[in-house]
Image: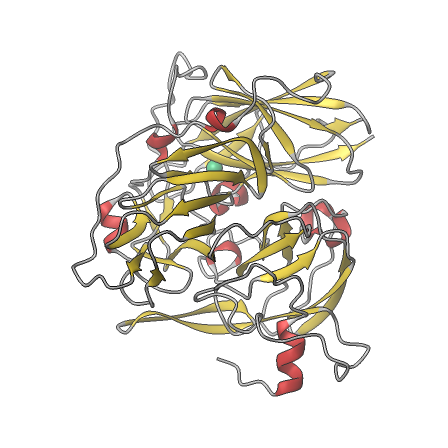
Length: 484
Ligand SMILES: [Cu+2]
């Protein structure tokens, strides 16, 4: 933990904008929440400063790990920004490797997007760089390292370099008693030949893209973990979330894992999904659990109407007991924390959608076929988009103003959380089921499944499209969209 003086503290913490309606922020953002803009801050100070440096994360008393993080914590501070209000962000890199800070879900130019493939400048090792960006759209966004890791499990998305950015539009009615930012994470990743993940949860409907003949070569190594947390604490190690009957909780979930999709539930309670990837959905729905692909966000409102002591966490017992959970405690309750596994239901984005889109129908279609070339024992798999790994030359050229349909055909046996930088897309079809009005920047394409999304090409410049599983991205699973 870095010791900072008051002046540095103000710089590090940024301007705490728009905090109305913020009842509580456990665990994260401890440095970001109390500072107010003051006249003492020199004119040259950036609005926000992110310092990349080694951090210590105490998951519980017996499990303390070191990684790279922002401003002395992992997750980094919750940054609150005002939609459309230009800000400066100073990134100070006290690490030994060049870094990139990506603003996931923001509609900003490639120069500040923090993506090497798009030409964003690197923040040199032991150097600094200042960025200017106009935050938007409003909602739950996040920032994280976009450095390649390849076979180094101490780099990029495997580190503690991640945090929430909440972009305010000033319209939030604040109809909740507590607001929580909860990032799901795994730590101490390792290579493994057997991946036991929750991909099956995504599957519903026919296996539309299952090839007639499967490649039966032995698969290569994937990345796994046995150590989990919500924010920086393992289940049971942090302070419980203390509630009273009748309260409403607004929970912003983020899956900040670089390796797996996740499903979480709050025992004894339903959660009403109000936004996906920070964007309000046409049809909010109550669900027993939420499935969150790597990189995705889900915002839920929970009515505290079932007094007791409950566990909010992974629906997989092994993962929950290895740390991915926290305790929710009603006032005056003293019994053992309880966990009730919710019914196993496939996750279905379309239940939050509308029956018809407000947007014009797509004029052109871009087909994206995903394949895996098994790496064999002790090696890594290679991932192909339209028959080849990154880079692609001029396959994906967008005409400004044109509305496109992207058809993603997943001919692999894993679910992939696919993300397009600097754009929002509207879900159009999930495994043959039509939907509309759900705006996202990431979508999980089920194994052997098919997802279609529509987007208007209105963000000129290079835009990276990739799987949000770090290893898949690093080994070919990405493509660059460019404008004509
Ligand atoms: Cu993937």
